[in-house]
Image 1 (cartoon, rainbow, N blue to C red):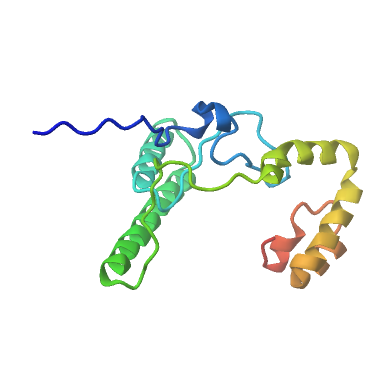
Image 2: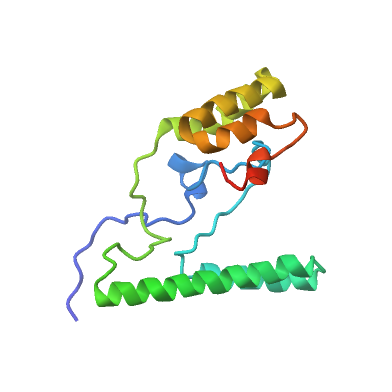
Length: 174
């Protein structure tokens, strides 16, 4: 067998958080529904990742053994099945030529250009929350919704101050 030419080692991927250039991780922004950023580390799984369903099922099994709410465990398993169906459909469409996007490559090399504003977002949000009171935040969010989702803005603007998610009550999502 002939020797392969030596090529420089290229870091395919690994976890982004282990790369000195991307310590904040592949998905640097994770927000709770109240707009706060968790203080702990997280790991994001996506539907197109072929290993995701197995990971979710293993998590569901562990959650069940630990006595987590059965509805939560069943929802996890249903999500894994749904993701599996989506992947099967995507593979079928790719095979018949109706889908031309590349398959997921979760361990692939970096291929997107970082947006510095996105990387700065968690710190910006924390500073915003520290400086602006709840009522002012609601007014700013309502104004942004008028621009981006005018059909739901009224529900948010007119809701009682104590209602944490007035948009959901109108049947929408922001």
